[in-house]
Length: 314
Image (cartoon, one colour):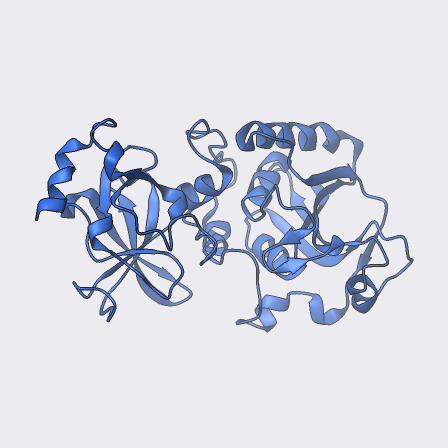
């Protein structure tokens, strides 16, 4: 049986492209939801006078994929605490929202947002209500990223691979280490997302200390091998030990890259780039701040990392 849910997640190009690749999704359509103005155009919506949200109509076969799974996937594509903004897009039209078309969908939506609230520690800025109206967007906005492969998208493109590979009825572990992880860290470490360059905690920090795995606590990198990179992420020339970081080859958008994971292989850290002119070793370990925790040098002994103080004597 088919169901329809309407999802606002910022610019509708990326949300549409994401759900087109999910097994069990029958059809998608970009459009404008809950507008005060009948049949608004894209220009009308951009003026901010319609109250409409850029929204994607998602039709799915619930014998293949359930509503709660569709919503779990949706939450991976948004910043749930951002108000009227996703990525570089700012304005009421870019607010996040879940608009249900059937009364029986409401409790599923509420339960999903309750789980999210428990994870992020506050009420998420995701609107939840019955759909008032939906007007399809112009033809140019339908399937936009397939027609414009290098078009702008605020969603981390690594999530498109997740959408293609997602197996319905295989539950996303919503509560994985929820007591340790922020929602951003959850997406980075568990789904291989990449945080925003120049807007993360450690990209320009050079205090003495070490960086440890957020989940396992294993010491990964020292500030002694950290260097400034124009990439906008924390960059190191080498790890504290070769065994601390696992290297895995993967292909994305027809480009082969080397993914960096923790020793256990349970947490995505970042990517390795060879032939870096900025690095003393020629290798750049590009690390997401959301995947690690910094321990200042003067706190290392107290936190059980005293053995690594010898790094400063080398």
